[in-house]
Length: 320
Image (cartoon, rainbow, N blue to C red):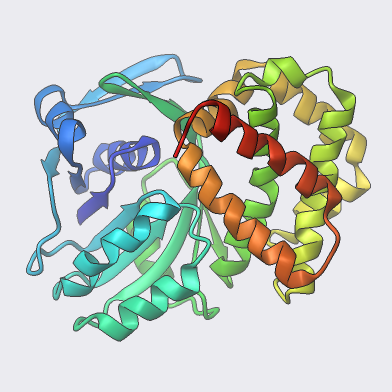
């Protein structure tokens, strides 16, 4: 199948690698120095857990034109960058399927904008890759298991898209998880990851500094629970529901898991490095979480306390 990966960061690079590996005709869209890197050096990925590096020659373009055709276009961008991509999506008249992959806190708004402005009746889905890592020079450091999770769904509870997704990923290593409403999934994910991001900023993006801080780790757990309570108050469902149930029932296991994550390189690669390199995205998601907490009228003392570290980190690093 002919596939476009719109975005060449950590997630986009891994998606391009995996889909190219199983025989699809993959094109990756990149700009600036990243375009030149891939064009000249190929797609270089260091698979951190697997201790190996791959180099693949993949076609690279700088833009999606209105008459370009791909069987599916995966748009793999940071949440704050998605808005800038929408005009190109709406102007395209040939691509039948667009899958937005990432922390899309405004999935409903994105879907509505495309439906209202696009001349093409394309299908719009939303997905999320459970992959961490960072850019390092001309290569990507990718942190992923042998079978990374890929969550996908629409916003209406339909499942007519499943055959095409199964066809695309049939020979891949990824584990597909289908969701009834991806808006619930994204909001739940943000409620879980933002307290972890706050913890990273508390430690100046070195989680080893807080690995022994029992109070801080427990505050993170309480903040996650607060965030989920906010979502429920606003009428959203926790997805997956078992995640918050496990946290409440087995808090001690969650605590030691968080402690272990903080003290090992996994915490750095999966959390700290991303928070360090993507502060603007974390700030953007923080504003979304703050908006939900205000709208819910619930008291969130743990979230309020922790988010101060994000603000302080940005001020100290002079990040605008």
